Length: 295
Image 1 (cartoon, rainbow, N blue to C red):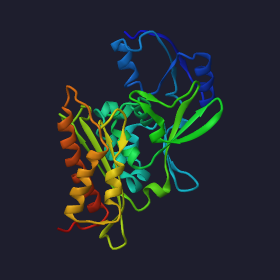
Image 2 (cartoon, rainbow, N blue to C red; image 1 turned 30 degrees about the vertical axis):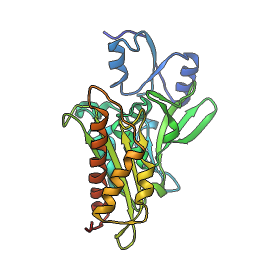
Image 3 (cartoon, one colour; image 1 turned 90 degrees about the horizontal axis):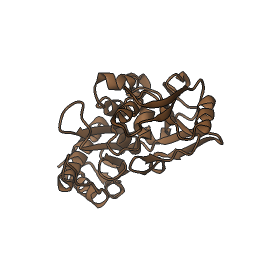
């Protein structure tokens, strides 16, 4: 049994906003793969819920007029993995969310729910950070868009104000055009497990494929929220695609990340894994971009 005080079903985004204002203590529920578990555990027992799962307007992947990729917040992980726009332009996101839970979770779980949880281990989060994602939020005062770095406030808390809900995730054209990326999840098991550390890298190579014009790297479980390793990014920018430069890039992530000790892994182990994943992810990203790594 689930201890739920009341369930309200939104018929539109505006109706959802109205319900959230009328019931300020209510929790939004989409696929329910996280919220229902939390209720059953007693963490959200007795809550009022506003269901937005029936709002098809928040599903799907499309291009905006300026070429940005728009992902509706109710788009399931399975949909993202199979979507032709994702596969053609940001396939690494599809690969990342394909590592969430099992098939049942991926069919019901949504990318909006994954990011709105505010947890650092979310498989989609580090990849979205590496793509310079923009979060679209709709509320009583209209629509606002903020960088994903600003959306995450602290562990388990995101920038959603009273009456607001996340309606889309947007990847600007400048953030994906000419880039290739790779995501690696390190976990104790190959499936149905939370990441011990997750690392996502994007690279843009020069025309002759010999220089890293730009590199972006982001981590999950390297701090209280997903984060970019900006020192490493700056270290690699403009450098040749050599093994030495890749190793220097990977070592530089230690300047930015701050993983914690937990029962899943010790801090120094997470640091070791973060360096190894950075080297592997950048190497594969360069390969996907058509580059050759020299000695």
